[in-house]
Length: 268
Length: 242
Image 1: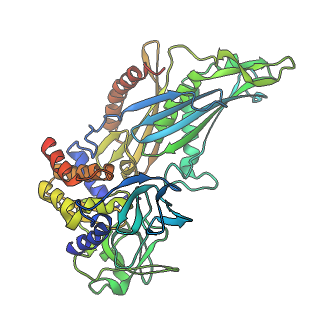
Image 2: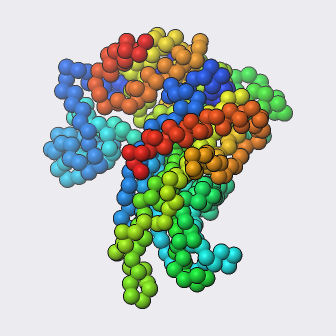
Image 3: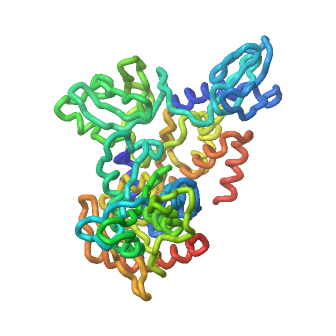
């Protein structure tokens, strides 16, 4: 159901009073649940639930040629399929704008945080490297798919094992080498999407809140050597954001990063 | 806003008119499950005969109403019927009327002649603009589409408040027998509530808190459709969540 004028006005009125339909604070997150090994064909997989939003992410490894501009690095490819089963908003057919934006955002959040040491994924420089495929499948869309997808991607990467190579140098998918993908220690990127509705800024929207939003800005954030690093940032929507709003987001995002990292300790 | 309650009440009567003293057994069934066997029974909605047995074709609650066995689905899309009062959202304006999303398989058409007052064809968006919400009645359901009317008591454009969606097959439970459930929620929260047969519900209250509470109460009901004596439970819920 697309947002109606009435509901949007009510939401703006409610957010002004600092209230939400599910009695959360404006920047309060829903409960997060992570489970691993949901797919036995993937090298690593994770299922993330944020409230009613549910995303399955799989990591697949294959051998390939490196890109000409980075012969000494492995490849990373993120793709997503917005299945009609996840939401009545999604249709079959070629991907539309959100279907292209989601994997690209997840790609940037993962790549720019340097969590994967791509230079260690080289088998033979300039000829053979590992390609890491991250596939995102939303199972249920109740808003905030981007944050759920990036969290799932990180969880699946941490869960993944590189498959064994046989004598001819071919991949034997049935045996895994118990060797994880080379990840940078202590880096665990997360993304936070802020949504502006009226004059209010909220985090972790449900679907109806997301549909009412005038603007969205997604930050990829990680912590390195005790310092918060913004790895990526993308804004969409027509409404502009003020400097004060961005500064306010920055003070919120560090707190939320610590909060979510703390919560995820039992999973990762 | 009266008539929608009466209509939905008719639907509710089908479900639970057998009363508590009769053998009102509600049991959860899955498609293909044998509900009863014997020639004495007749399959109703959501059930069919297979040889000796009456089997379910829906996932829902099976019920005996005399000789008739029917299954009330727990999930299900809205199937439009004539005279249903629904809530719809304007998606497009054409030269002859408005196109509305009513959460059914095809969109519905509201002709310009069916608005309660005269609307100039050049100023149609002043009466209903895209994204506006109306409470309307289904005038006809044909293969080429659904036609609506706004002529009737309690129908028209909805002003203020908000709408949200519940699973359409659970609407009878939200309304309750003779509107008991919805009247209870209205009394306790002081909100105006209109329930469309398509599962869209409009709430307007004096303040935000009352509106949120009314929505939560309705979601409490739709989460617990399979429980009997729900009106008492909702009353208790209101006591606990003052």
